[in-house]
Image (tube, rainbow, N blue to C red):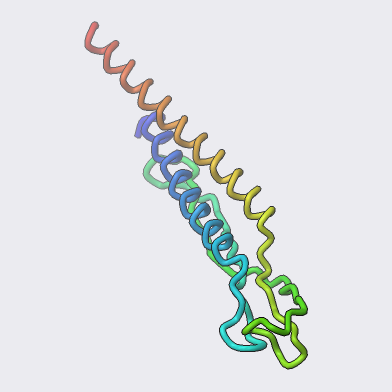
Length: 138
């Protein structure tokens, strides 16, 4: 396989990985205030995503793939709010372990990585087009 096609496949794997990463970040942000359904129940638990690099046998290029989507085991924050429907007998409510600022930073990083992969695809397509034009004039 030629290097330009390998670049396209590598960038496409990056696009797919960053799309899933953005989806996970969006889920975390959407559930940043989701408490447990019953008093004392655990609230939404932040999701994490892990990537791994693997060699593509067809192209010999290094590709990225999602290794896992897991749960963040950090502690939930606890807030005193006796009027809340999820408050326990002492009036304490468990809140999700989602930090919106961390999620925003992660979203920004994923967005930039996505854009970089997209630019790589555009550049590779342009180079392929230029190569075809050169072959036509020869």
